[in-house]
Image (cartoon, rainbow, N blue to C red; front, side, top):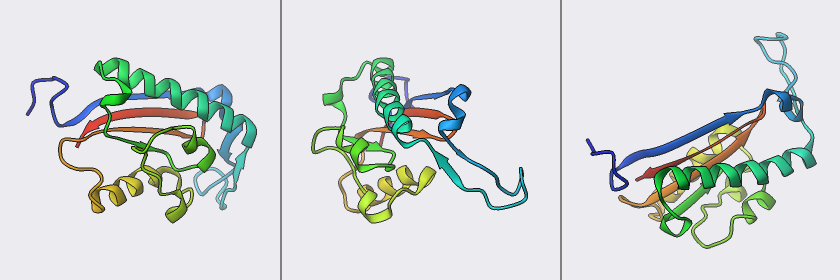
Length: 147
């Protein structure tokens, strides 16, 4: 149990957004519940890239402002591992990158990256970890966790 301060452990803040008007930029065109068949991923790559860079930056700033933290306070940034070019836009040595190991595993990319960074002892108890992601529909979000 914490007192609601920045020093608490656990989830300090979460920020989730979506814009259904952009659904046709990244989606699956079927699936058992909608067509009874396997769906295929459809993506407008350039547009998704532009939105990813913009929205993930905005939602990162939103998380920092909500907690009163600064980027320098964050021990590890763990972005969605969708595209190396997007991740490379996050500068610094405190970025967990596992896309080379796992490729784009969709919603599993952040949990996989966290697992690797905890196992190799980069992320340790008390560290501040900022998570950020973007996905189909179009959705995006962030969270800050004190590990």
